[in-house]
Length: 62
Image (cartoon, rainbow, N blue to C red):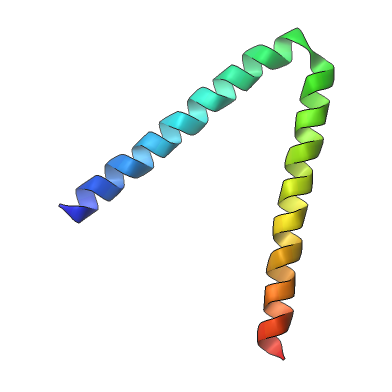
């Protein structure tokens, strides 16, 4: 039972992400500048996450 609910939850998350991507794509068509800003923001988030991971790793090594 728990597995099934987890599966549905994951499926819902995927659908949510897909719909979000669709929405952002339709927005991007209207303004390419917005797209660049979004991509930069996304890249910053990814970089921050990587930096945090790296710090965690270095802490655990010590």
